[in-house]
Each structure stands twice: as structure tokens, then as C-alpha cells.
Amino acid sequence: MRILWIKTSPLHPLTRGGDLRTFHVLRHLHHQREVTFVGMTADAGQIEGTRQAHAYSTHAFWAHEPKVSLHLQRWKFLARALANVASDLPYAVERFRSAKLSQLIVSRFREQQFDVVVSDFLFPAASLPWHMKEMSQCPWVLFQHNVEAMIWKRRAEGKTGLKAWYWNAQRDRMQRFEEKASRRFDGVLAVSEEDARIFREEMKLTNVLGVVPTGVDLDYFQAVPKSAPTVPTVVFMGSMDWYANVDGVQWFAETVWPLVQKEVPNAKFVVVGRKPPADIQALATGGRNIEVTGTVPDVRPFLRAADVVVVPLRVGGGTRLKIYEAMAAEVPVVSTRIGAEGLDVADGRHLLLANSAEDTAASVVRVLRSPALGAELARHALEEVARHCSWAAAAQIFENACAGLTKQAGGGQA
Image (cartoon, helix red, strand yellow):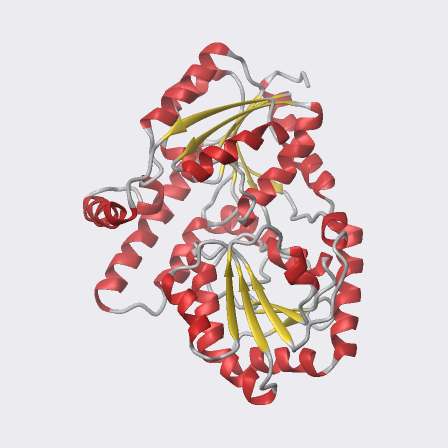
């Protein structure tokens, strides 16, 4: 199988959940299949990341869309946001639209024949050369890590005034674009049964192929020895340039953490993740035993030294790799129900689920005060991911779905 894989960025550095999922699926496919990766770069960090493309692709090609300075970025964002008012595309899609990427994909079609084309996430769809779909003579597949419309629906909730108008408009645009674009693909692969249900039942898509389950690299997270923290330690792990993580950490720090500290005054909250914005960095200056690490070379020492990992997300879709990673690191997890959405985990056995600030704080305190409870949750969680969460199995499911489409397109030939 010759695969053309299209994404709006390189995968490295591996600090975002979607990039991690793609990396693990692709690295398994790459062992036996020819993978041509086409992506975009925007800055020096991404250009550096392209040097590791050999780990997941046979060939890699890049369209460079350079970022402007931070000062100009603010003006550029404002200009694009204002221009987007008159557009049919949601801003989150339009900002990735690239003539360079489209031309690069066309050049690949002219030089090579593929058995399947994969759009990784919805965002490349705005740059795909749809006029070449029929002549490519192979199925096009959308690998959709989230229901994007659901994310924007949740972001719009609770907004008032001008913000409400803007977020509701973006939600409606994303809904229309996601439904229209998804129908143009020969197949759609989701990452959770709930996402697949939404695609089928609410968006009325008839091309949903199934679900590629979330995996975890168990050996990787077990390779670092556990260590005992000097004070009760609560850890959040996730990219801090993603709205859902920023929102969740702010909510936890402002509403949950004070309740935890009333019961466990010496507890420490550690936020581990790249590119924290100024308001997240400011959490570390308020004398509340909060540490914000920024980018770290390896998250495992932080996980293996934690008493509990929190996933306080209130916005999101797809599945959260951070939960399986914490489970693989043998750390008990406290999550909101949205945070654990789409994962086959049981409340009270593999983790503790809570939604309100009071219930979340109470669950965190329970784990901090009862090492036996934390150890029991961690043991059951580790057993679960060891049995059911192999990336090799996920990659095989992905390949089987694509192979089924190529067989249909080839008139019965595999």
C-alpha cells in the first residue's frame, strides 16, 4: 500500500496529542508500507522537526508558510479575524489554507501513484486539490481526531455579547464545513465510538469506516523509575498552546485548587506543557504552590513522581492521550467526564470522574490522603492499558479500513 499522508505541520516535536497519535500509527505503517508525507512548516522549530520525518515516512515534502514576528502576529490575527467575518470558512480552517500546500500535493500526484490519500485532521481539506480526486484513482480518507464542530459548540457555551456572536458564528461555520468536507471523502475514520456516532447520526455521514482506538507505548512510560515526591504533588500534562488545556488549567487553578489546599495545605500543583501563555505562567507567581514548567525534554519524570494526574478539561473532542499515558506511568487519574470522553475506562476502577469543582477537589484529596486508593486505581489502570491499548493494533485497524476501500476501488483487487 502506497500512502499519501497530508497534514498541516510536521509531527515533531511530539508534544500534542494528535501528533502523538499520528506518529504511532504511521511508524507502524511505515515498517511495511511506503508513506509519502506532505506537510507545512511555519517556523524554525517546525523546520527542525522535519528532520525526524524519516521515523514515520519514506518520503517527506514541505510547504513553508513563514510566521511573522510576535508583534506582527497580533495584527495579522486581527486582520485575518476581521477578514474572516465575510468568509464561509471557520477561522480555524481558513488560517491553514495554503496554495503552496495544494501545489505540492498536485506535484506528488503528477510524479507518483498512490493507493490511498489520507487527510490528517480536517484542516488540510481546505487546501486539497479536489479537482484531482477522480483522476487520482484511489480512495481519499479523512482521519478525524475530533468532532471539530463539537469543540466549537462547547467553546460557544456560556459566552455573552460580542463574544457569543463570534463563537456562535464560528461554531455554525465549522458545523457546515465539517459536514460538507467530510462527505467529499471516500471514508472517515474516528478515534472514539462517540465521535463515530456523532458523524453517523447527527451529521448523517454514510462514509464512516469505523474507529481507530487510542493506544499507548507502555514500555516507554515504564522505562523511567518511579520516585516519591517530597510533598503531595498534583500534575497536569498537556500542550499549553491549546485552548482546551488553557481553559482547564485556569478553571482548576482558580476554582478547584483552593479547595484542595484547604484540606492538604502543603500540596503542589505542577503544570507541564509547552508554550504556556502569560496568564498561565502568572499562576506560578501567586504563592499558591503552583509550578509552571513550560517545555520539558521528557514528561516521564514528572508523571512518575506525581501522586495524582488531573485532566480538568471542559472543552474537547476525540480522546485524550494524556489519560492513557498517566495510566501507563502507573499514576492515578482524576478527570472531568469530558476529559475522559471516548475512552473505555470505568469510574472508580481505572480513574475517578468528577465534573463540579467541589467533586473534583474531593476526588483529588481522596487520592492524596489515601495512598492505598491511589495504588489500587493505578494498578487497575496499568492492567487495562497493558491488555487493550497497543499502537500496533490501532495501526492495523487503520490499515485494514484503508485496504477495504482500495479493494473496492480496484474492483476486488487488494
